[in-house]
Length: 223
Image (cartoon, rainbow, N blue to C red; front, side):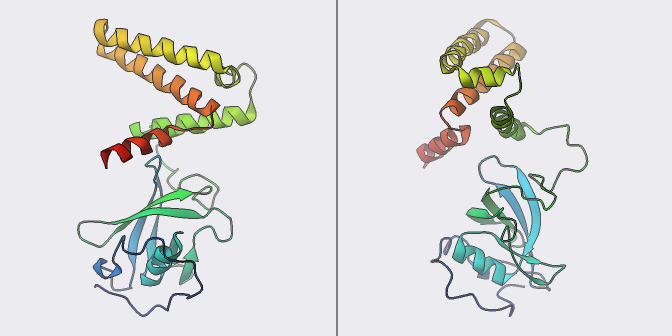
């Protein structure tokens, strides 16, 4: 069914609306319980973090505050994601699927999405086989972990500590991928491209930057 079931009014003391106009609640096909599934996705990496549910009140609060609010089916109450743990999720965009009966929330998480402390709720099953879009976010988190733990003999730590070496390696790998594109097999080209991405990611982290910032620039150019 469409429209708002009677689930309560929004708090007038909440901060000014951040997402009003992005998604019209009247376009949402809530089910007979007044709920709609909400897929929560990391807006930078594209990784799926969790699947939860919204009702009209949760959607209104999300749009008004810019932080993800959901409806807990087990507790039958409004749920401000991260209100207790501090792992809130700033909503960058809300999207509705073609049938209007599922919402996609693109979020910037302040911490783990799962109550277990895992980054994503989807960690059971075949976790060894990473999807292609997971490779770079996983690499960046590995670099951040190496920077924090500083294990002895780590090549990543060596690159982070020696910025000139990191710069030289990016230049070297760029030359090698260029040569591979001209003279070598497709597999070798893929390998050299991976080396470029690895060293470029490490170099960016010496400046506290991430690949996502470059991706945002590309998105801006598209617009």
